[in-house]
Structure formats: structure tokens, C-alpha cells
Length: 319
Image (cartoon, rainbow, N blue to C red; front, top):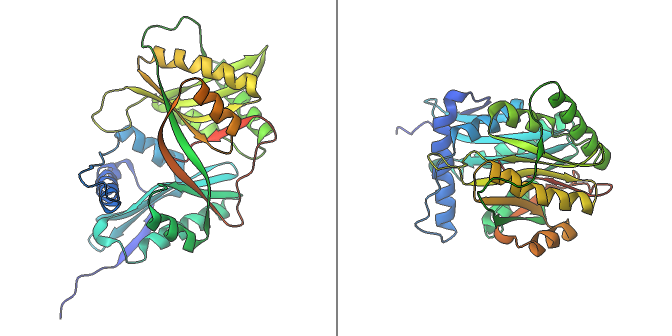
């Protein structure tokens, strides 16, 4: 009796030509996931191709896809490393190929790659309500940790009243990027956001806002303002990395970011705050930020997340 060929090959490294099939698998898989969680009728849109370019370039050698016998994309895992911090996302398996062990293979392959790259923290984020995912990742050795809470705040679209320092252009750009690297390494040795900062600037999808204590860099926020979903207008400034030496620096960042959003002519500011930073979380709530979404951070046993020596180092494990 003839049987279809269910074999897969990979991982291969995707190119920009794979963005369309990546988008189809992404939308189909996450729409199916929401449906099985009881959110029937929710349709997950495809991502902005520029966001995929950022994900592929940021992952580099950790960008992995698997294909079926006919060469069609069936699964992907974008595995990222920021110095010693490693994480996976997004990752998905085409609904018709789920339940065959491919998801487990993808995650284990990502873990092996991160270990080989020297990552000391390894993890990912998933939806807290999705108990199937939590159980699946737990069987691979990932342990539930803190929540990452997306908090949003409406901002005026009018021109900002105060100047905001950013990376800018010219000879000082490299100097400012190096300042950011040194600040992160001071607070959380080994972690490095340089590649994300440079990619964001090169793709023109966002910028990095800086605040100072005198001449010294006291904090920065890397953000994207390009639309996340394909075909949507630009309406939000999303903070991906937020680093502050202390509470005073965090307050100055929270005052500068609405001005950056106004410069981008967007009406909303979103910050993904890990709940390990309880004081920062309460600062945001006290400033009128409201809870919009939650994700559960899961950490590989034996590859724990480290706390900064001081201040806050918020690192978004999503694109």
C-alpha cells in the first residue's frame, strides 16, 4: 500500500526568499493554537516582512527551518543569542505535521546550538494559558519562571516638548553603541545587545533612546516602531530591551520614551516587563500603564537566568 512520504530534512538556514512560507506556517500554526485554546475565530495575521528580516538576521546561524520531502517548509525555530543569554522564538510546526516529534527535535536542536555557542542562560516564552505547551516544554527540561507582562500606555502624537537622545548618525554612533555594550556588561556580565541595536538601526525599524547622568550613560531602551503585522499602519512603539543603572535612570527613560513615540507619530507605547523586576513593574503601573498581555518565561534546567548586579536589564524574548 502506498504511503505518503512523511520525512523531513533540516535544519537549514532560511533566506529572505523563505519569508512568505515562514509567514504561512506562522499564521496557520498560531491560529490553530488559539483555536485549540478555545479562542475560536481568532485569526493570527502574518508578520511584517521587515520583522522577519530582523528575526532571521538576529538569529544568524540559529535561524533554522525544516522542509518536507517536496521541499515545502513545515517548521521553523528562530534561535537567538545576546552574548551569554540565549532564547528561542518564534517557533512553530505546520498543523498537519504536529504530533510527529518534530517540535521536540526543533527545541533540542536549538538548545544544543545555544550550548555550543556558549550561552549560559537558555529559555523561551509561551502563553500561560496554553497548558499543552507548558507540559511539552517541561518534558524537555524547561522550568516555568517569571511572567513577562506587556504593559501599554497611550501617548500624545504631538511633537515632543523635550529633546531625546538616540544613536543618531555619524562618527558618534559607534561610540554610543559601545557605551550601551559597556553598561549592559557592567550590570549583567556576558550579556550583549549590540547586534540587536545595530540591526534595528540598519533596517530602519526603530532606534535606541539614551539617558545620561551627566556625561555617563545611565540607561537605554531599544525599540521598534515598524508595524508588527503585515499590512498594518504604524501605531505603536515596542520596547525590546530596557537597561537602567538604577531607579532614577529608569524614571528618566520612562519620561523620554513618550517623546520618542511622539517623534514616531505613534499613539501607544508598549513595554514588556519581567515580573522579577517588581519595583520597575510597580513604577510602570503607577505611571498609568495597563496590562495588555502576559507570557510565561520558561528556563532550561541548568541554564538559569541571572539577575543583574544592580538596576534593571529587561530583555524581550519575542520579536
